[in-house]
Image 1 (tube, rainbow, N blue to C red):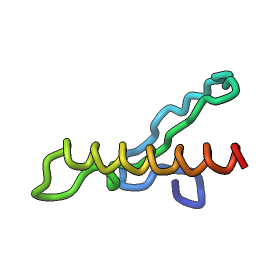
Image 2: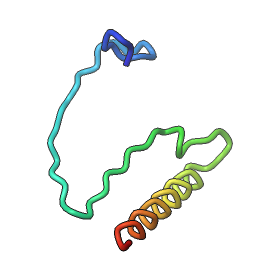
Image 3: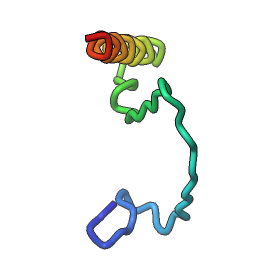
Image 4: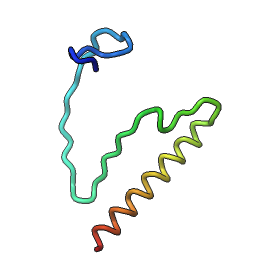
Length: 68
């Protein structure tokens, strides 16, 4: 979004939607950009495996921290 709240890349007005999703203890919300999983000349499967590895590593790190 630009400073005035309009979308970048010349997309024009795009409707905004808000939603509420309750989280339970242990739930994980994963937010990522296409740049994490997409690379020129590389299969999307490779990018998705890279994402899965990053999630696995992060979850393991937090689990270790929580165990003390």
